[in-house]
Image (cartoon, rainbow, N blue to C red; front, top):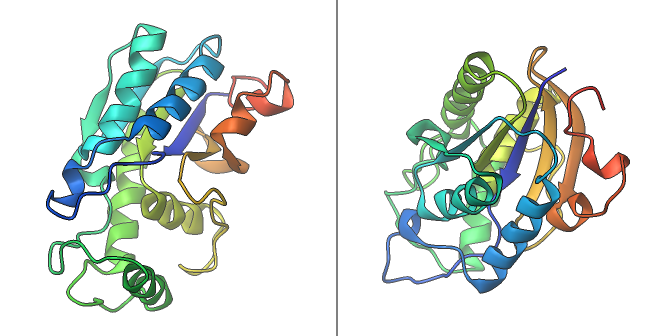
Length: 205
């Protein structure tokens, strides 16, 4: 059975003077992505996809270079539209995010509604799953992954399982043919453990 690995990008360069979609991975984030790429080096991965945000493309490019593949970008894999507010510094940002997930049918401060973002994201991942042969990797964002996970777990938005690493760089694995969850959230570091259990994305695992 072919797998789809959904990965949230790891640590980024936070710069309030630069639009959030243009933030790159920082040194720690790049090192963690290189670790993930190495873990995937013998996985037989067939394709790589990313959102059009710089941090996701940075991650996809690292894996693509290590595996000798190219990657495709998809605008509809991006985070919920937050352009109404632009950058919001923590801890206020996390308060707004909490309200976003707690009120999925409402626009929080002009942000794209969670329910609308979820529909867009699920459609995008379904399209990728249907189009590409073999195992595939999607590099996107924490919020995107949570909205997709709520759909996969058939729970209300805000009640899904969440990635546990504060810097991001977490992944889950789906069965592409049934569009169902195969493996819940793990960190990049767990993927690097050289054991069969940690490589559950491989076909037939």
